[in-house]
Length: 376
Image (cartoon, rainbow, N blue to C red):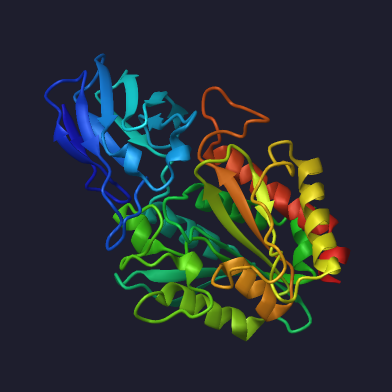
């Protein structure tokens, strides 16, 4: 047996693979950080063998509740990802699998590589209604890519959506891929109606360095980008700095920050309650969008989520809070599960890339239906 993770987004360390019944593994920490939970590795020469992969440091991971009722994903072709038997005993995360092929990949959630990201940007820019822009560079020398859909005119509303500030939350970029696939469709009446009135700016991956390095939560130097929006710097968070500069140039009328949550088995939206500018109008806009989305897509729900901040207690270093206050606009955080959407389970895949894309489509439908209350 050979265990490897020296590829785009890979993360695992193997101390012993001599016994298939007890393959000893550990997850590598983010660089200059104590965060870890993301894993992605390949096992080779394992066809028709009952294997137990034991991740021995799982008990010290960033979100222990993320292991409760969790199932890892596996794939033979790195396109279709299915759930496998997984157990957590408080210290070890144990993955059990008998592979039908010589090589099999395992991951915390379906990976979204930087090579696939490059393909996504290249595909999008071939559409006549899309312009690809490079906003800046990361500390590892990768680009921060932005896609603009629609004509950049002053009279049009400016919609910003960013994803994958936390690189291990790959469902956020699967969501972006689904959104982009719909935005390039000239025959889609909802897209056409929105782009008649708005310009949509997308940053599909805010954290390329962490993505390629196989990090859970931070960039190349250990910065949690979703704690940098009040004071980004070239040394610690150039990703946030260049995106915020661009948003300041264009303005913002509606925003969505897309994430994944390790522990909660639900799709939900968090608002910006607690910012200085929070108002009854903002509360009504938040509730309307959430209820509309829930009515459109049964995978989304409004009962479970994060408790709202009390007045004056919002953390202004968060992306949504910072942008909502700065631009006096409705900005929301969309969270998707690493596990499954418990209200609409899928026994084979759990929450999956395909369902992420469908939820993105539903978010566009909800935006269209709530347009007058949110943006007029």
